[in-house]
Length: 393
Image 1 (tube, helix red, strand yellow):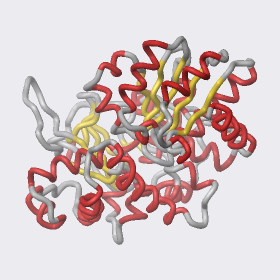
Image 2 (cartoon, rainbow, N blue to C red):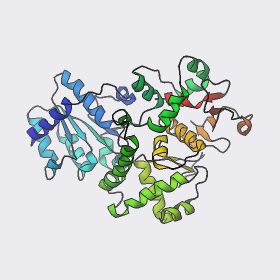
Image 3 (cartoon, rainbow, N blue to C red):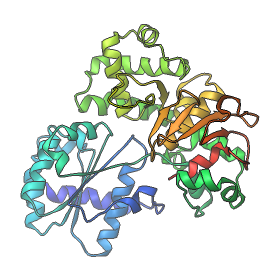
Image 4 (cartoon, helix red, strand yellow):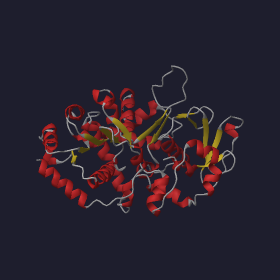
């Protein structure tokens, strides 16, 4: 069986030619014994594995790549397979789609404990929650891979190198930064529609169909494989996505959503959480102080703007703008709904999102408050271009 797996590995690498490395690649400490890369389907987790594998091959390391959705692995004991690999001098084990293997958490814990080998595995984002409840959480270093930022989209499209900026740098120096970046607002609109998932550059003509397939696979395979929902109820999650599409983020009425999706209020909160784990939804809580707990999110968005264009018939411009801002900023920074503006970042900065003519009326005289404006290339004062928040990672 080990030789069969090696043949598949060789065949896959023969056709692999993606050289662009995502932002996360440089953030991972590959010296850690066990690393998890989790995130939505289609964001490039397998690509990262192959790129790291090729690096190690150049160093003459002994690496084994296994995709745990291989049909011929059904009934094969993973521990026996790994033991055979280690016995012949194996040093690195790359496991793809671990959630497709029954009781994967226990197997990973055993591999960590008994073998002198470094492991990188990939899975859906829901895996992180399961790990947090098991002994595996103490052994693994978790890394969440997001879809393309606007910066990455431009880098790949034009084969160029662009700097990324911290939130503080954007707030303090946005005018100087934007003067140094030649931006085409048409390309920002393009990114909002088709730029979040890297597979666009391989499947441009059928992008939305592939994106819809990705949504279905996330629900029908990933969430069911993790035991979060039974197959017979997956249609309810898809119905819930449709309802969220039709609802405005600032009008979250849980009773109405439950009725429209034909889901009980009790199950609704679970289903919202599952779709958030699968990175199909994005949940933003209210600002809280002290020990107060929030039992339900203040706003519910589709995870990214590409999902809006693929899944919704008529998304409002305001929803698209807020979704982009929330998606990009929440990847790196604490983000809450603000009582005075649209968003509060890092418990300090208040942002009001709007078009190029958006005024400061709603946040007038509030310290550390900013208007984030669409349809402008360069800002002024406390008015910052919306597209620039796509340069945070």
